[in-house]
Length: 345
Image (cartoon, rainbow, N blue to C red; front, side, top):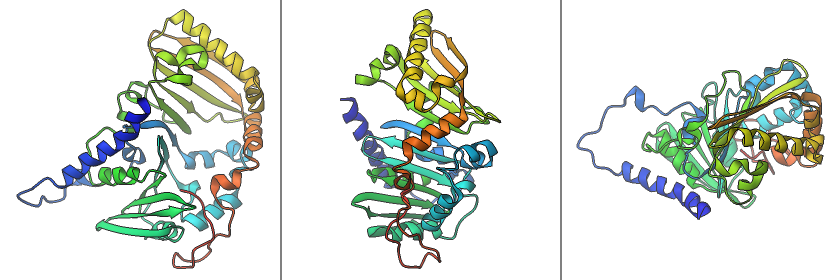
């Protein structure tokens, strides 16, 4: 039942947005500054149906010399340059990227430092099969089609904000409704579950958000702690050296003493597992657990070299697929012939 309701929540949102767009008006109102499309990527991901959300700050990550060295195998300049050629987007220049997962699809949203003159739209369209372009407003484009047999759509706002939908094209229509201020439904971080979490620190490099309720196998995870959790977040902050501070925070209802013991046991199991050893969790320092009635916090300084080595080992065979740069990338202007393959948004 939970999956059914989440899968249909987006459709309900879209119907509400369509109804709003058809509402009669005696006069055409003048545009107001507050009606302008938001630039914040988080303002385009709906709370309804959300399974998880990653909020990352690429520019901060690429400016961190320790991270650049540690993750050079995955985030090499050559790979980033290839991504630019195929998509028109330079990940290294993006202040923020939001990736939100839903039952039937994934939404990627970012905002460029300045309008790009249509380059991203052109690159996206040339990678699609059966591309259909809609231009409902002077500053708004929606492009949809398939890539590798999978539905894809792009909503471009002022050629600066881009929302890429993969799998479920309803996500693109919802993002379009948010851009036009037609949809009043809460966005992801303002939904009932995630709104209970503490605010993100100003120096965060990346955050993972997961709303509850946690059911089935999730309910028994972490020695049963998630069964009464409303939501959780994992925050990664800069370490300034060979460590990477990570904080996990969960909100819900627990018995303080029992929750501390359960979380301690869960971390012990994970760090001693093959996965934990692969990512260097067994070498974590300054591990700390704080348990309250309504909030649990686990924090540690992870060993950056071991974490990076584990990520390289885990992604060595499919890193090209992750960035989808297996084929030759276009090198000229957006009007050049389409490539054989290109990065997935």
